[in-house]
Amino acid sequence: MNPDFQSWAGSCQARIETFLEARLPAADCVPERLHKAMRYSVLGGGKRVRPLLSFAAGELVAADSERITVVGAAVELIHAYSLVHDDLPCMDDDILRRGKPTCHIEYDEATALLTGDSLQTLAFELLAEKPLADMPGTQLQMIAQLASASGSRGMAGGQAFDLDSVGKMLSLPELEFMHIHKTGALIRAAVMLGARCGSCLSDEQLAQLDHFAKCVGLAFQVVDDLLDTEATTATLGKTAGKDAEHNKPTYVSILGISQARELAEKLQHDAYQALDGFKEAALRLRQVTDFIIKRKF
Image (tube, rainbow, N blue to C red; front, side, top):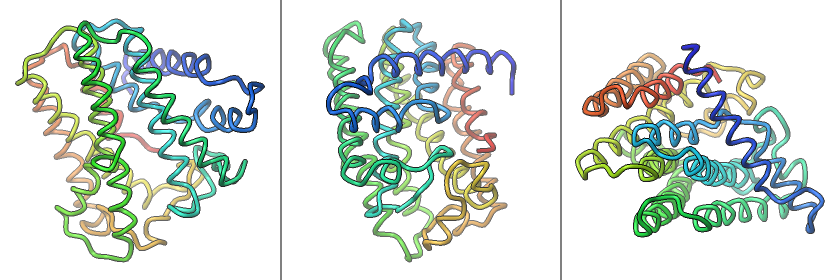
């Protein structure tokens, strides 16, 4: 990993962690069990890829770092809520996440359900409580985009499609449709929210950035499917091989390992191409793309 990028990423991750530590309800605040579960599910784990994308997009538009921190934290809270709910017995029924017991195992199912609900609402509280864009209308667009990316037309809808596809043989376009929603929507929101925190971009530039984010979101999932096949549970921090065990369609099951790798590289190239017009201002976005494609866990 590029030492300069490693330093930058570490600084962004630390900033997000500090902010979340301060903004999550204290563990001794009533109701204590729920607040402990919220902190357990968010703090001290994860690569914070989505906040890194927000910070990188924010640098593209010279956004204030405090604004980007709020946006990155909001997106990370939505991501954490989705993991808590995805791990529940009624969903993917998993017992390990980020190297430790999942929320419903550590606490209980009812607490895990409420934890996800509470993390989701906290995300929107953060987006609404102080100015994050130069124009109030832009901030309303940001709130609307995160809501859309999280709901039935985004992440939740993709999860519903995922649950319905178990045991079925999907075509490649169907699999792409599922992951554009389940994984890609929140990644696209992370980029676009970060980009709206600073100087205005043209409609054409916003479209280029959204296309970049779409490519990165799909690439993230392709690499995730490869890691689920090739990495160990100890390395991943979550149960390896679970997709195959549950007969879920993946990029690996449809394309095979070699073609899935080729697809990840093609998506990486397409993502780079979408950033051509931004030149050196998009350096961090390119570096985060590399980080996503080359990650080992």
